Image (cartoon, rainbow, N blue to C red; front, side, top):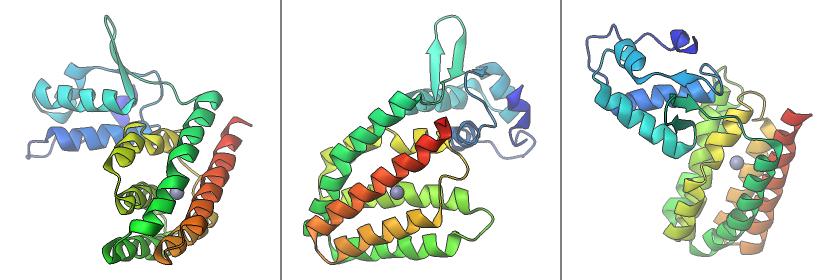
Length: 223
Ligand SMILES: [Zn+2]
């Protein structure tokens, strides 16, 4: 059972919170430690983490809203399947509808703080790209960078629409290794440069190219 490979944290004296359990399970589903269509037994997890069923139920409900687990009436919780090729294409179509426009707005509306935060992300990504744990660091960097562009666009509705689609969770789960390359960092730097320069057309174009390239990289998973 895949759950045997989860970090053994039940032995720690400290009581684990729903938040931490959620984070650990999410990570394990993302990196394939818990494979698709695996059963997640709440009682077994409660014993493993040495907690009451409440934080386990909380964590499973959040994973369900992420689209990483499904609740079946008789079988309990199971991890969902990976995205199909068509679902991946749909997800990127959504991104192309939301993100280039968001980047253009960001170029018009960004504050100095947005520029500083976005530039900080590029510095972090450039440093991390050669490290051993590059994938883990850069996947989180990617989530923050795309979210920050929506923050800079000053449209919370747009930002939430994107967040609720959980694009990053599903694409990173699909290609846990190898989908993050130096090209990605260069593409992000072009987006940030155009937003900092206050150039909406350049920001829109840079974001569009980045999403098209990301899609091309991810579609290789199906070849
Ligand atoms: Zn990106």
